[in-house]
Length: 330
Ligand SMILES: *Cc1c(COP(=O)(O)O)cnc(C)c1O
Image (cartoon, rainbow, N blue to C red; front, top):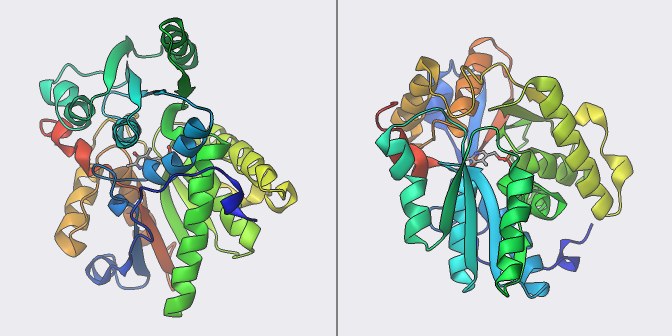
C-alpha cells in the first residue's frame, strides 16, 4: 500500500491527537480504558472527518482541472460545510444541494450552525425535499455548471467513494503509528458510521497493514444489514484500488444500528445524556447527529460490560459546528 500514488492536496492538521479519556472511563465503571482520536481537530473551518477525505477528493478535482465542487447533504451537513471550506481554500466555486431530510421547520436548524457557515464560506446552496433522488440532483447541477462553461467535480454525499475513503485508510495508519509510539495496545475502535466512507476506509486500512484491530461502527441512519453491506462494498473497492482486495472480508465489517432512535438527525433523551457526559467528563464537544449517537451506543455497550478489560479508541469525527442548529431540540 502506497498512498502517495494518489493525487492529494494538504490542508488537514495532521496527525490529530490521540488522547486518554480518564474521567469518562471512570464514569463508565472503570472496567475499560477509553481513548479518543481527535478527528474533530482536522482544522478545516471547524474540521471533522470529511477533511481527510477532501484532501484526496480535491486533489483529484484539481488534477482534472475542475473549477467547481458540487456536493450534497442534509441541511446541517458537516460534509457540505467542509467541502465549502475546501473550495474556498483553492479558489473553487461550490454548489451544494441540501436535502430537507430532517422534518423540522425550526429556525435554528434551518439557518444556524452549518447552514450559516456554508453561506459564510461562499457556497451556493439550494434545497430539495426529503427523499429526493440526490444522485440525479447532483448530475443536474453538474450539467448546469457545464452549460455555463464551468468544469464541475462531483463529490458524493459524505465524500464516501473510494477516493474519499483513502483519507481513512491514512487515518488507520496514523492511529496505529501513534499507538505503537505510545506502547498502547488498542483492542477496538468505535466510530459513528453513516455514508460509510470513514468506517470503510478504517477497515480497509487496518486490514492492509495487518493491524488486527476490530472496528465497531455505530449506525446513525440505516439498519444493520444495509449499513454493513454498504461499508463492506466500499471497503472492498477501496482495498482493490490499493491493490489488495483479498485482505478485506465480510466479517471485518460490524455495525450496531440499535442507537439510531427516531431517525437520522433526530435527538432523544439518551443522546442528550451522552452529549452532557462527554462534555462534563473530558470536555469533548460531540454533535447530536453522529458522535452523540455513537457515544450513546458506546455508553450503553460499556454499561452492558461489552468492553470490559479493553482499551477502546473512540474516533471523534467532529460535528460540534452543528450544535447551534440544534439549540431548540436540545
Ligand atoms: C459524516 C459524519 C460522520 C459519518 O461518517 P461517514 O463517513 O459518512 O460514515 C460521522 N460524524 C460526523 C460528525 C460526520 O459529519
